[in-house]
Every structure is written in structure tokens, then in C-alpha cells.
Image 1 (tube, rainbow, N blue to C red):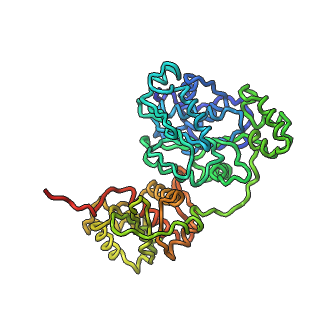
Image 2: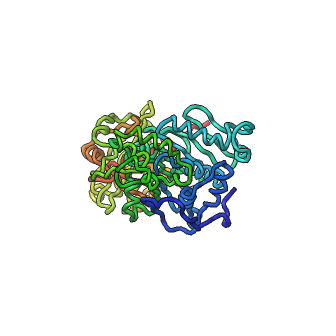
Image 3: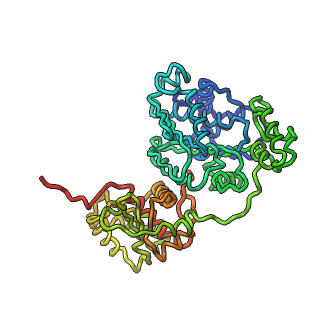
Length: 497
């Protein structure tokens, strides 16, 4: 079922559903939608027009076969069949592209429900004669049924893993696609824990799918809301994004069934359980807002707010510790954008596996000097530093040349790519959140870390630290990443004989 030129379809079908409240998509000419439709029918699903058109956007590709939309969002009421759309897309990615997919939910009960729906397609295990579709079960290499590690692996390299979201994913796998089901419950900490698992996907073609209903009142989850804001505002921040949304502009009369049809694209196609919606409306007479959000796609008016710190003063103050003596180190070197400042931080591991970061240098580049910095880094690379991670275009290249002149092994230093920087920042934030990071108090680092917010890196949802004096913050993230990313250990002496 591999996609071919003949299966790439740019032609939309005539719409037979209510007009979306908000639809955003980037220009494209080709899509795997015909493959999606074929796989859906063989998996036992009959797609409705709105699902087909949504999958056309999700599976759009450019001339190099890369996803046009690295981020795909659906804000669609309950009782519509939006999960079917995501299931079909995940199965297509696995079967046709050999993609490794992570399906993640807020609640374990929902995770189990989704797992069973995939077992109805692929079977419970390889050579399962009693469950699944035969042609899909024939593709299964093996399955894992251990609680919280459930997965299906295909012979073509495709796979799907199921996980309930936590602050620390700890999955141990790399993914090409992440499906965030129940996306309205997705928090920043949970996304931070998952993002590093996508930086080394085998296909080098990552996509994130967010499927949910409007964010509930009093919820502290912000990712889905922020995604919707980007879709509505457009511009560069939305250049990798597609968004489908049905909903109403006000709570109104929740018993008015004519309004249900404007918010639910499945009612006229017969899929939506209207009787269940009527029951829900009766049960929510005293709380119409809840019904409007769940079944009518009503979003609360947005409250203007300042950017929240990624880690914050309270959490950061609880991570104080001391740098351990001895052992392998990682160093991060961060030059400011204009090259006037340099920050150097180092990281080390304690015996219990907790990492400790500390700022070593926070100074003007001209005052500290590249020569002095190069000499010091060369000496440390020979003694106890496994990797020096360097970022900042202004002087990074010059430092690289000076380290080479000092015969520092090439494996001992690295100019960080954008994906490296994204991984480093996510690693620092998630490590602080899950209690596996400590820091040595520092007058330059601590206030900067307490107020550090985000800035976008690239077009795939990646971010770096921003804010006043973020240099020490980013240097610490680089140092931690350097410590974790390299197994080079200059403290291990060669044995002779």
C-alpha cells in the first residue's frame, strides 16, 4: 500500500457538511488522501466527506514527500467521529510509510479504548486468527501487551505505541508522528516530555496531530488553545499548520437542535448519535456552558495574559544542589546573538543519576577572550569533559576553528543544530519538572531561569528559551544535553596489556 504518484490526489470532494467555523491550510498540490480512503475501507471504516477533506489536508506533501502540515489540529465536538479520522491517519502512516507513531491520551481508560480499536484492525498478536483484519494482521511482526507499554510493531518498520501522558514520558523510542488525543488536556510539561522523542525519527519527517474539544473553564492546559490562536492569527507562526474547527459563537439555547447541525458535521450524515446528544442537553440544563463546550464546540473568550515562565521561580528554587566531585562532564557555550556576551555552563551526574548544572562564565566576550576560552575548553576536554556543545552563530565557527587548532578531538565538540537546541531546552525543562535536575545557585542564572519564557525555533513546534538574560539558561540546557548526548569519557584511562 505504499503511496505512488497515482495515489497522490490534490482534488477536494464537493462539501456536504456545515461550513467550518475556522479552517486553515497551507497551499499544496498533492496528498495521500486516496491511500487514506483505501486503507480506511479495508480497515472497516466508511469515511464521511468532512473526514476525507480533513485527511486530504493532513496527508498533504510537498515535492520532496515531506508533510506540508507538520502540525494538524481538530477542534470538533463530541459525537462526530473525530477519532476515526486520527485512527485512519495513524494506520496509513504505519502501513504506507513505515512510520513509528505515538498515540497519547490524557486518561488511561481512553488509551485502553484506542488500543482496542487498533487491535480490531491489526489483531491482538501476530497470526491472530480470531481478531483483526487478515491483511493487516499479516503485516504484524509482534505486539506488546504489558501495561503502559502497549505497542504494535509491523514487518515494514512501522509501529504504534500507546501512552497516557505524564510529566516525564520515559518512552525510550523515537517517533515520526505523535497523535495527541484529548488535546484540550495537553499541558506544557507533558508536551515537553514528548518532544525529544521526535528529534531522531527514522523518516526525518515528523508530524504532530492534535485532536480535541475546546479547553474547559479553569483548565491549566494551554497547548491546544495556543495552537488555535496561531491558526486564527496566521502569519509565520502558522506556516506549518492546518486547523479544522466546528462550533458556535455563543452558548445560546442548548436545546435548539438547529444549532447542533452548524456545530456537528456528522449529524446530517447519520453518524452522530442525536439521542445521546439530546440526553446530554437535558442533563446539562443547569450547566449549559459545559454542554456548549463539549457538544457545540464553544470556546471561552480568550483572556489576554503574559507569557508564562517555562519553569518558574517556585520550581527552580526547589532544585538547588551541589556539583559532585569527579566524573564526566558536559559543557555548554552560548554566544549572544550579537556576539557581545558569552555564557558557559557545565553539567555532571550524581551517583543516583540526577544531573547538576552550574554556570561557570557569564561575561562580555571581549573581556573573557576566545583564546582563553579555547585553552580552557581544550584542557577540560582532555581531562573530564565528554562533549562541548556550542551555540550562537556570531563566534561559534571561530571557536570551532580554535578548538581544532588545539587538537581537541572532533567528537569532543559540536556546533548545535536547531533540532539539537530544541532537544536541549525541552530536556532541561522536563528534567526540572520530574525531579532529575539540580542546579548550583547563581546570581545570573536564577532570576533569568525564574522568568524565562519561550521563543519559536523552526516550524515543527520546537522552542528555545527567551527573556532577559537567557544566556545562562540556554548554556545550562546545552551543558545538560552535552552530558546526556555523548558517551565519550576522557576520565576512563586506556588500559595496556
